[in-house]
Length: 264
Image (cartoon, rainbow, N blue to C red):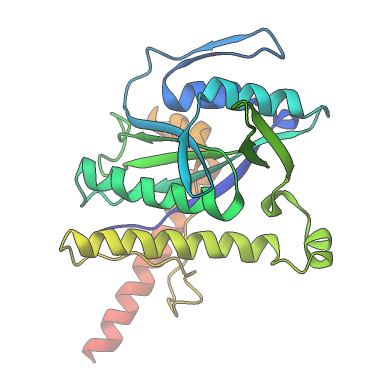
């Protein structure tokens, strides 16, 4: 069964992260960070199916060098707690084949580039060898500032995008709140994924709405994150894992109760 997941989070110096290291790791490439002098080499990383870095300008898709993009982003920001990139993580329907998943990601990533006028750097990953083999997923990195090329093909980063502004600033500009923007991203992803599932003549569909909005009585689980996931795989139970196990048990009881009601 196709499942819905879209989450977004900033890549920030405050949390000890850099856009250059994040891009190198996700794409399985080597990038030298010209701001810090560090070289991030992940060329031995496996499981990267497809990567692409680009922007759309004058309705033309232009391929970019990811090293140039993220070094420019790092050098543009001066504060110690700056957000240098934003990441969107999406689960890809395992019912689609590799090409179909790539086509799906391509369409969605291009829609994000057009909407926010940013540079995009995405990488499609295979499921972890030790994890759920249905967990095909994609990491989409986007600049926190608008991006364009000048006449000399130099990358120019402009103002912060609406996704990076606080709700007070968004209200002054008569723009949707951060929550509304993320909800719109979720809706767009579901619509695009369902379009491609239909094109593949598959009956599965995903739904971006919350359990509450869908009228479901079952409770949602929380995302484990890479640290808790690694610990759980080693047999070490975590607080997040315990919470999800309790939710699964509660949902099973709810489903049994609903089944009993339907059969009375």
